[in-house]
Length: 222
Image 1 (cartoon, rainbow, N blue to C red):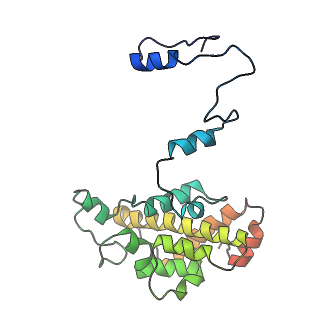
Image 2: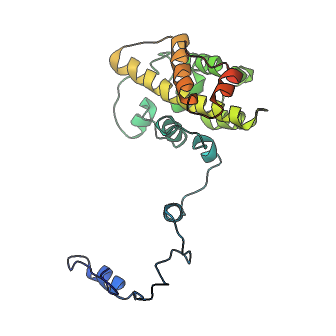
Image 3: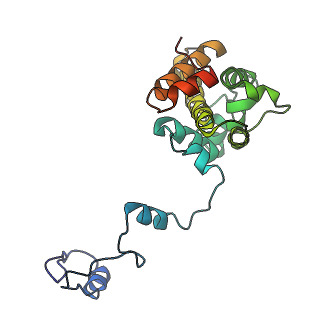
């Protein structure tokens, strides 16, 4: 805008050009641009409008909780959205990957469900991190794991710590899968659990109730 008129490049589409020119610009200093009749619109309003056509999911607040770590939560989001490029997922896209068995057990096809919980190696890791998972008679999927944590009888801060552990678990398990598949480096379940706990410990250092959560969940840097 230039003063009370539009200043648009002539190179843009003529229909867009005329659309903008049809919108009057008031010279009254008391008036300004609004968004959906909201004179104090923020980026959050634009963001919600952009995704307004998308379906709501019941796990979003558990993945993207108040204390989430973007680096780790994004892998849980991809797993829940069928975005992890497992061997089975690549084959479904007609990408030949050769051997589709999971590099941890070398028996079952590599699916997201098997990667995260169905494989004995993976389940051993999560049970070391969150012992409450050992009560499952059948292996859960990731969505069920999040809902299970949400239903535990813990204070909110401890639940956030458990959600952090679960997100970091998904990240490190995928990293371990890639390490085995592409570099030939292997870590046992105990070693991987210790790596995850170190990462959780460092994250909790920046939390206001971090020391309390470390004590409740027995998270240590060792």
